[in-house]
Length: 386
Ligand code: DHB
Picture 1: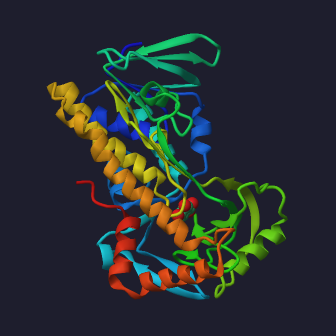
Picture 2: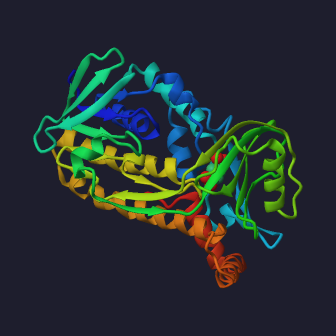
């Protein structure tokens, strides 16, 4: 198979990139080792920045404005008291609660409807020829039949276990951080406990009250990274959550989905080599606090699409040469923001009494200063693309 841009990964980054390229008349082929149903069922975060929503809203059939819900603020809770961060008032923007798998259903339907070539069940095993004009993806389909895609440019949007990344920087070459905790996440059948998200710091650890709909809620609480999602009874889950959101009595309901989310930060040292680039989780991982993952993936590909248009339509290599540096500015801002929200709200297992009181001092500083609240609102709603 030959195409102009070969994309590995039909997640948000790969699908949005193919949409942007198609709008400029550039053909692409997307490979993904998963099936369409698997992609549509992956449970991920639910918060979209204003810029992400504005882009998704331009895609035919998008339900982001009808099923998604605008959120004009969040609450930071500590010492049993809530402090609202007013997004439009402080940053002039909002966020939208629209789960990633719903956005993926819209994107897949729109791309397939537009005739996009997407090969499900095809696993990329290597990328060759990064330094030449015709890089190619070596792959194998579900039946074990070898498969190659040759292109003008190859993009790895293939997640944190990226195969494409190896063609850029080998298996080393990145900046890592591990955290001594994880999140226990649940989906439950219940009415909302609050109208907006509550990020709650308590002496027992962090909890996040999020929503999905009038009848389904998403909540998380800080846990040990080795925790077994099946080890807790529903009563224990609710007891933990209730204790960590002092000041609110959560509406309880049947827990029908549970998972443990790892906390890691990662940025690849190199995002591009010649005619191969990586975007989204292939290029970086953020801890979940602040829900930056999908938003950052979309920002990467908006910038990359502009650079590929210049390269492929006008033979202008300059935007591509500046792409990684431009993308990394936002990536490191988002890394910092996710790390900061995480460290400000969680209780590290080794935290001393000094650390605990310093953390409360930090939270108090942020909420009592308009500059502090504005900084949080700007980061949460997403910096303008520039
Ligand atoms: C959700 C996840 C997050 O990581 C976050 O910061 C906010 C909301 C969610 O899944 O709803």
